[in-house]
Length: 302
Image (cartoon, rainbow, N blue to C red; front, side, top):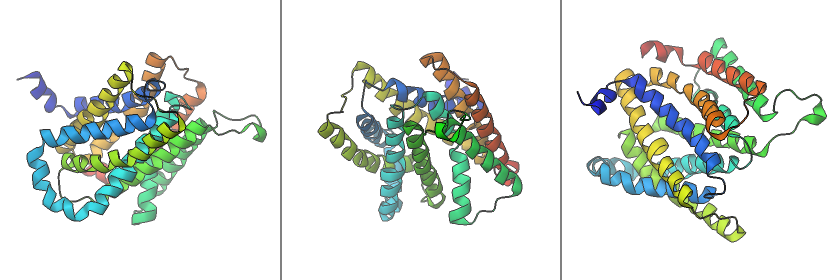
């Protein structure tokens, strides 16, 4: 059996690699500072991916067009708002906060999705899930406040953490939007999302140019663009979709909990960031919150 064929049949390995690639995007966001500006990075990511995917999956894309052409508003909203705004705020936040903080806050996205499903779709929360949501929120607040302040006058909110939290709201909205996705494969859907995501990034590029803050990619910047295009955006998505086919979405969802852990580890090892006690406390609360707030019915069915 070929090594790639063996890997293709191992959902646990595929999911570990997927979450590692997503965590790597957190570290890359810090490495991008000074090498390529957020607008350029976001635009390049989706423009390059949007050029690559139609070549690799042209039959599937062609077959999916009759279904998707009637949902163009949905495609524009999901790609142009959900993906582009998440990435843009994600990369801007890296200029103002640490990769450890970004990873922990990003880990709360499933909790935000659960709350959104409750408010917008009437999904029911049991008391265990409610406790999980509360713990996750407390974890994010601890990160934002850098631990427990000594007095109320000591409370200061970091701009980067606020931007990252806002980015998570956009991605949670994108995730909820997938509930009404058209009947096409995930890779075809992502392919069509790329164009509006790239176009929606153009105003950010123009603003960077107008304000004099634009940073054209250095050699390291191009390597960063290549990583975010190939691994978090493409390979991770392929691996995740394959894992869903093998073991179902519920069991795959539990592996997402590894992302903030990997992000914290990579930030310490690669970037040399300090992992403080309040980080450990916040990470523990977010992970416990994710565990408690998971969809138990789906997990059992998976």
